[in-house]
Length: 251
Ligand code: NDP
Ligand code: 8X3
Image (cartoon, rainbow, N blue to C red; front, side, top):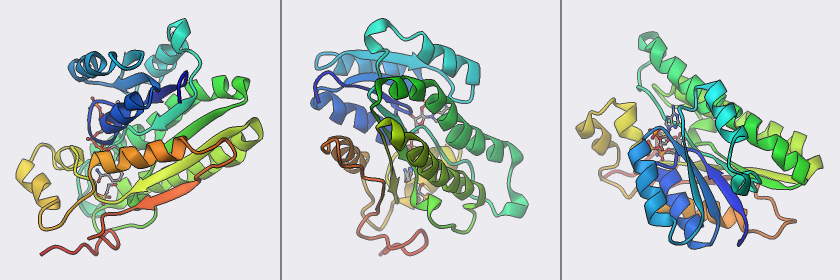
């Protein structure tokens, strides 16, 4: 995978950070995105002994900043080969009648519109190159709906549709598009969903063995390292203890 450049959104934590590390171990140069500058800087320090690393600090909701940051990348990072649309999160787990409108806005703005802004900035370069590989991080929540999941599930169903639409529209340009849809992965996801309530967040992963961010990172690397004629279009991965969003073997 030498001489390839990957842009990863949400690289400051969880699945994105683990993917950055696996990619660096496999000689892929990196553009790492997120809001938390200190974490981006630390990751750059850690990984730049292996590969070239550029960091982009932005809130993915800020359309103009996202477009400008990617447009003005340094020359050596302009030719992006791999895009990992990973940034995202859940806000709240309330039934629809009790949902918070700001939470709804955040999920649609980050998980759906933010993903589109980054894609809009990166895809033209791939079209010009007549090659590229986009992995959209969906979720089992994009395949089914669970109690209180309403708007988060809607945002991930949108990612599922966007993934299919991207593949239909971009295959003529030689661009591979696929989704990786995880079940329960222990990251900062639940801390964000429950607004820093660590007891409630930790309880999500108690009594069973959840996936780790590294499990997903290895799978993402597998998908992007297949031969050029192979496109893994849509992949669901759950912990062995999970059968659906609501059926999890907890002891
Ligand atoms: P984390 O909370 O650990 O990581 C989320 C990442 O997204 C962080 O790097 C964060 O960076 C970034 N991010 C969030 N909001 C913004 C924003 N407004 N602008 C820019 N970046 C942002 O969660 P995960 O690693 O678990 O989540 C990664 C993806 O995986 C998400 O799309 C999530 O929906 C999906 N997923 C997670 C599952 C799980 O069980 N954990 C299961 C299925 C899918 P920063 O805060 O620095 O901006
Ligand atoms: C994250 C997994 O089950 O909380 O997408 O929706 S879940």
